Length: 228
Length: 290
Image (cartoon, rainbow over all chains, first blue to last red; front, side, top):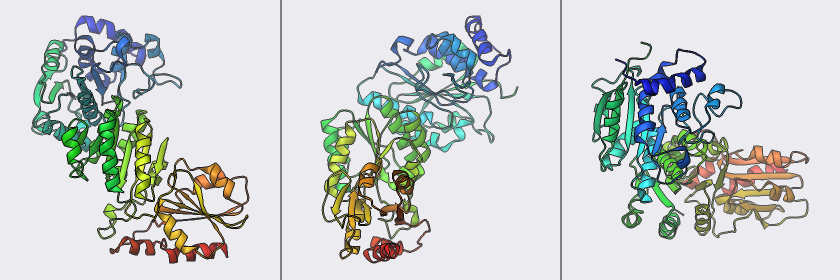
């Protein structure tokens, strides 16, 4: 099932080991790894040199839990020195167990409390549109358990009603306590939807590139259930 | 005050392209002309106050200056975590403009009252709090807020004083050199003046309780100080104690009680219940000074 390319695994594996000091990694970190790599390697128009450009693409990690994969990808792409990975969560580290935007170049939002990223992403998309920055795309990543938070559903309904062009990615590892009977996509009425294998980088890339200018887009990236 | 807010903010939308207004249905009709002129910058998210605050955070991240608005209990109490994280934790700002205050909606009950809004914001860092006492004080506060990226709360009320005053903490009526000082916040000034007409006390006024002008207050106080606030009693006690920590003094803090009134009627009825009408204030203050 795992089709992580040798390329990204080869780059990210040692960085993750450096972060966790362990060959094994938390499932929540792993669940996002391929999506994050595809975003930063093939989709997002953002580099270490353009982190403050008004018309950069935005990526908001709403699911701030388990940011190891995020940090590994940002380090691999040169947003901060790889040495930072060695002191993950340390007293004076830039890298906390949840990311803080004021401490890490390239991090758009500080998250950790679930259910905040989608609202911030809606505001970001509205702000870019109001300033005519129409080439800047907005992506936000959530976990399927995070969808339990009611604030998400305020944003989901509003984005659909106003045809806001942003892309939400839900990593589905079936970790929501009461599940999402009928599927996650059924909760995103009015959105275009792609459901992909969250380990298939080619499929992820196609799904992320496939967006309407006048509708919000949902990518459900399915990975193995938590703990398996 | 609400009409003044709508007029001033509507003008700001035309004057400053950074300005955005985010609403959750409340006052949306009054902003309809502005929304027609600036459809990308006047945003009504529907009855979704958490989203309203989150959208403000996102707008601010892109460099805009969001004004968000609703009844105080929905704007502040309900969206407290969004205010804490989507603004403060992101190190961004917004201008929160509330109506309703502690009991303006006196006949609809506690669901629409927010006596605790200023106390809630006091748990967070970096908030400026304005509690204007007159509509004419409102435009300058809103225009000043447009020039910064600070976190600013403007607490509008239907309770108002007969006249407007300047922005600084100021003496309205001066007593003898060692007179007790009564500091009235926002719309509490007129009731305080009415309560104390024949008492030899100094009455001071501020429309900006945060940051409290502690140096200004300290310069006035000889021994006795009374704060009269239109929100939870004692909200400013920590700051007053800090300002006077090395000065022997006595403090009395008057404001809205924590206990629910569970009655309807007019704002004047609620003020009387909380002892914030002229008679109640006079009783509390003369007891304290006796």
